[in-house]
Length: 117
DNA sequence: TGCATGACAGACT
DNA sequence: AAGTCTGCCATGC
Image 1 (cartoon, rainbow, N blue to C red):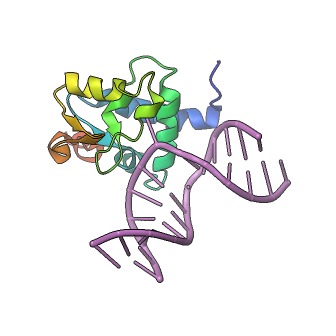
Image 2 (cartoon, rainbow, N blue to C red):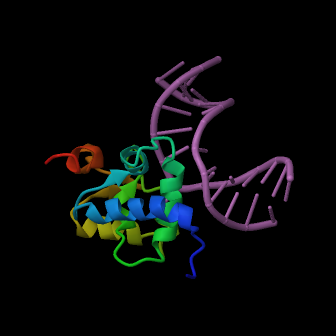
């Protein structure tokens, strides 16, 4: 494995990736929401770290994860700083000055969405 | 080994 | 209300 993720962390990272993969196109969620869903609400920074590592894996829509106020703080970690915004735009999400417009309407909360049913 | 640093968030002042 | 501090925990130097 070229990635430096230890076994004991793989679970957390994997869980994060699983959730991120479940985010529907055109929807977004936050680091904190994912952390909370995983039972460690205060480990949102680790979710960010997981997203950093997510680029090494396929099919992880990291662009659908932003901070709690809908700001694209992670855009610098993409191959180009406009990639994140462009991908969101393609999914129908408008971004103005790194801020997702009408953020709450696009917000996808795993605590809610993954608990129904 | 110790200290600083994050794609964060919430508490506190 | 806005700025600061703290928890989280893996990494890098």
